[in-house]
Image 1 (cartoon, rainbow, N blue to C red):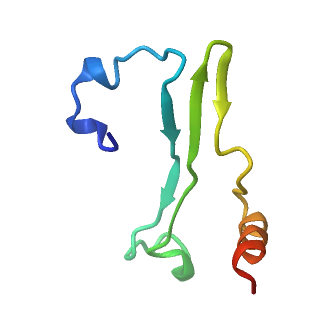
Image 2: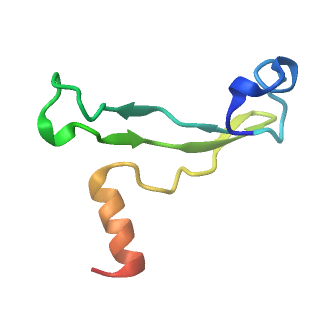
Length: 84
């Protein structure tokens, strides 16, 4: 379930992190379109980086670790797949 605010605490937020559980960690930064405290070119812009993690018996495995997260890496990854 993506929107955990409507989930039962014991089955979501309070659930044990046992091997086999997969979760998404998605920090984000968003600028409101009318926020005059940021440069005009950033107003209305949002960026969210997502990683999928698998809980293992020894810790965790980042399932999305091979994907790029910086601008240059994303551009290169895209060019390799769709050209340009």
